[in-house]
Image (tube, rainbow, N blue to C red; front, side, top):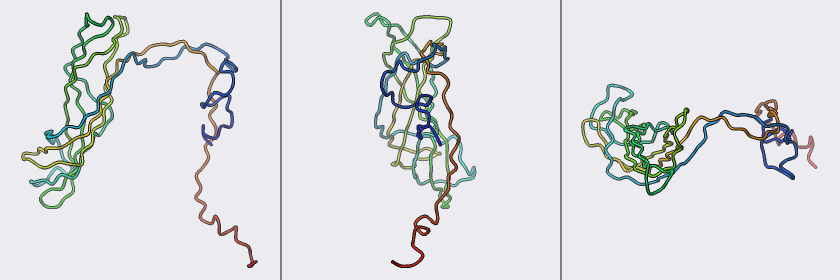
Length: 210
């Protein structure tokens, strides 16, 4: 079983039915990442140069034939971060940074060997975000990323020219301790083992024809 079986609806995640206050038993302090602000940008980038940093296998022969590329992680690396408070919008700041997206490139070398390479796509961002006031616990600027390419060509020296569909979400986050109402601890149901019913339907047949 799992949460979806709804065996103990009073102790399991799911929709609230009736009065939401029913079952509340305490106020608890939880440690979470609070998102103070966030923004998303989705764009199509053409003619982006993607340079290979390493390949598997290591011994590949040029020229290469591009097959496809995509981000290898949803976590982007923030580089060259500059946060400048804005006088025009109190509580907001201009956030300038580079977002590095780890990429995996699939290609075929001159000998017909299928290979995988790694590279980095670096994008500039210059946005306005709401940033919390100075405190003992610092905030962070983090990036959630996704990039995919099905179109590209090989240039030379381990470089590809690609067209990419890119999504970048910038967030202002901080580790905080929040006081929230609680229904108590969550009930964890026992696992239900998967069993493939190979003979399902066959055992339902009558012994003799009707």
